[in-house]
Image 1 (spheres, rainbow, N blue to C red):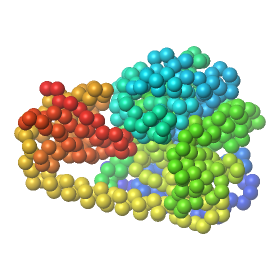
Image 2 (image 1 turned 90 degrees about the vertical axis):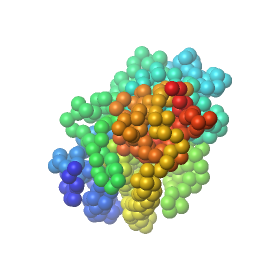
Image 3 (image 1 turned 90 degrees about the horizontal axis):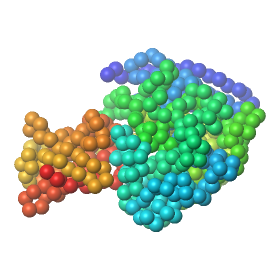
Image 4 (image 1 turned 30 degrees about the vertical axis):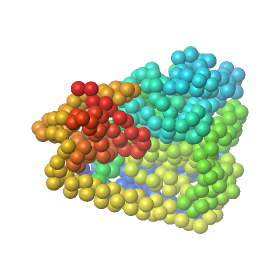
Length: 505
């Protein structure tokens, strides 16, 4: 695949001058972004800054697809991942403001079939619990089952209901995509319209977000869309779009910097856009209300003092200002949307590779410029950390490959590890012995498999054909001379929690 050695400069600039911009934004941003695209191997970026109710910066940099000259512009669609959650939280807060539902309603009032492993939790959980990640699940728990799978919404909800949370109800914050999906399922019960139809009618259309798409399956039909990319062992690669409409309210929206500027302006003006009250001010206030405690806060330069979560928004303090923000990560994209209400400042950064921290670095750089804080070069700080992690990962990978190359002895013949394995909630995984090598494939992830290479004893190194799912060590359990089970792990980007699959034949 052709490498990008130089990327085009900004392809579009729309500026409305209302006051002097910080020198970083006015004079240095183009060079900063262009340099970062090369260093991070990002094909394309779209950036927007809203200040005092106006768009003061709206630019596209680079290309939609590596190896092409198809430039990013202000209307190029990027999948925004979990930035979708603020739309779902706002949609339910609108219904609350309109007295069609109460955010304090029990979930079972609207979804009588809602289940949790503990029936008491299912009975007591309310809509707010779904929208602020306090059901007791570990962050990303269950996402390997759901994410990019062939499961229907109903099947995801069924499996979520069987999954035992690692923590107590409301006892610990844990980021739960399936909870947001469940919250979205309340909307048709109240309105008779799907989540996608409702957010389109009540939010996208009134805000003039004319290019924004609610479902991941829709992006492929757009003529102005960024493609998904990742970096594997230092090489930039194109990857397929994520198939996540079974979790749509948690992360399926695709949008552009231009469209999101309308969303940001409405958020910063208590729901008003273009002189009209599009979103009730009470709904905005509800989503910004702290519900969950994440920790004491703090940034890489120790200027923050708390970290909370509202209803689809992270809430923190930085340099004496309240920050309302969210990020989004999905196959091939990472993005950020940041609001600083006291400064009437909004920052949008969209990127089309999931292997960068620049989407975060740039927002901090722009914030510091407006706050008149020292220039930090966040991109280099993040990049150094990223490269250190990559160096360590490559070192560990080399050690494993060295072990594999010695053909280490396994506790049992390879044929003994082949067979059918079952996880009581996920379903089946098959390990086949083909041409002297083991390959694991999954019932609900068609086309996705992991090659297993012996590390000796009962440990194997699993390498997925889809780089999103990574490389992990899988330990097998052997009892009485037979394989009992295997512990399956995937990349942390997908899920932290391991799965134990039991060998059944």
